[in-house]
Length: 243
Image (cartoon, rainbow, N blue to C red; front, side, top):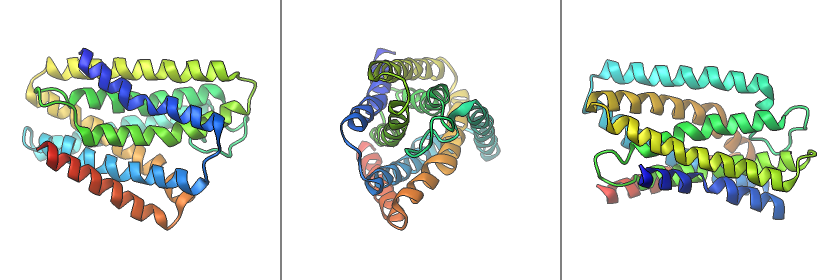
């Protein structure tokens, strides 16, 4: 569990880095979009080869489909709740304070980050070590969210010390989520573990389609496709090396 917590912390560490970058400089809109698109490709590859393909070897296809649908619905409903609480534009660096409350940002980041960290912990089950491709995808996907959210928070009355403490708390919870994900799957049957992974895959894919991909295209336009393929290719390479 300690190892899983460490990797969960590392995967979420880009939240801290993104905040510090946002405090010091304003990255070009295109650069942020390319980073996000790269993360989209890496995560799609990781979800496919690290979660869904192994699940197909352990359970029936209809069970994989059911897990994907359940995970997608869970994220969809949770995301709608976050939007109502003020986090609808948490990934955007141009939303006003009224459109994007601090509580909405915090809750939205928890929603996005905790399932990712739990999945990262799950990938350690079996003693094969952390999935480098999945770790890279999660790290990259967290960076633009932190950048945009920190810009919004910094424009409110919230102090930078409080913002840093907020991200540190989320990183700590992400580490805990990774440890819990590892323990939960490690103590279950291979079939149950596969179903949990398909649920997580459905949630991650919905997050990518609903939030990351549209924002990446909005920021980087036609270059988003190239960056997405680059991220996908790198994750495939990392997966093949691990194999």
